[in-house]
Image: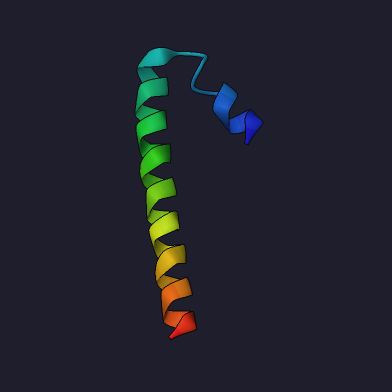
Length: 42
């Protein structure tokens, strides 16, 4: 985690874009995990 967070700090132009893409991927992963958990419990 720490290694990935230090990369965007090198250049803010690419950093903001990478943070946006990274946040989107994280949200999709969390949504997928919740769907798997809900389908597994039922």
